[in-house]
Image 1 (cartoon, rainbow, N blue to C red):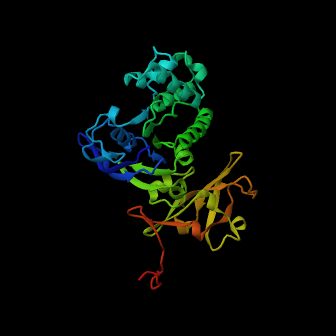
Image 2 (image 1 turned 135 degrees about the horizontal axis):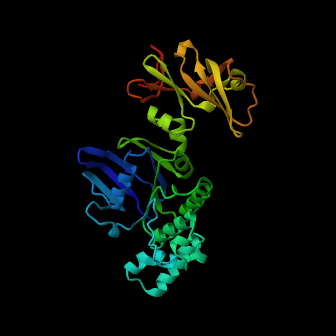
Image 3 (image 1 turned 180 degrees about the vertical axis):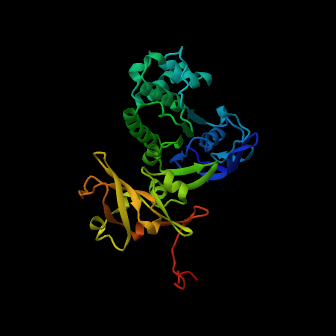
Length: 351
């Protein structure tokens, strides 16, 4: 396995800056997820690491070696695309063995490695079939097996599960995570799906407009968002943001609950909440409505966990609260999170 380090990486397409001065480094054997909306630069960043795009400036280092001028085939990386890119005229066996045959490996060694990869992904019974005879999940496994068969030092995945249905994606996430842990190869995974990112990543790189907005564990990017973009992009429903002068007050829907429910959770911030809609989703209840005039009648949402049985009706006003420790403050102009809200004249403990 190898570490990947990029420094000051920038990519222009004509006058458009797709990737803007990004620096980051993987940790040994970690599953790093690049998360962001379409057009944020995450796939372009991955393609520069792979050698499929040449950086306008900056440096890519894999395993301690600068690889900017090296073609993909000598970077010892493997990449799986959204489309899988299988050869339709070849059997599964030949698809998986293709990179080994390109290296002119001995036939016995090829057979051994293909059998190993096929068993790892549970597709050994499919080796004589062609891609058109496979389901979407089976084609995805073949693409992963082909990528892994020569044991690369870095594994790059560009939305490989996006063509699967929701049920299959959930099982594929579990299998992919188990596989990565078993092999221990440094993996960089691109997705726009926050559920995939939160479920798979040891760390998540949240991107927007070609820039990194935050790097952190799933817990950190959810509970301690660096700015309002991360706060509203990660989480469904997203974090509530309400204006109070030059400050935005943020709180997650699951922390925004009736006073009777939140009592006993320390100091509470209180809101008058006029309920307009109640959605019962089985596992959750989503409560939509507006805050009082003090908060400009802003729309917010509450999420009730299955164990919370509290009577809520549309058209009524309730006293809702948020534990002070769950309240996040953001600068209204920049969107950057304010670490502390220190009253004037109160010492902050720093020299």
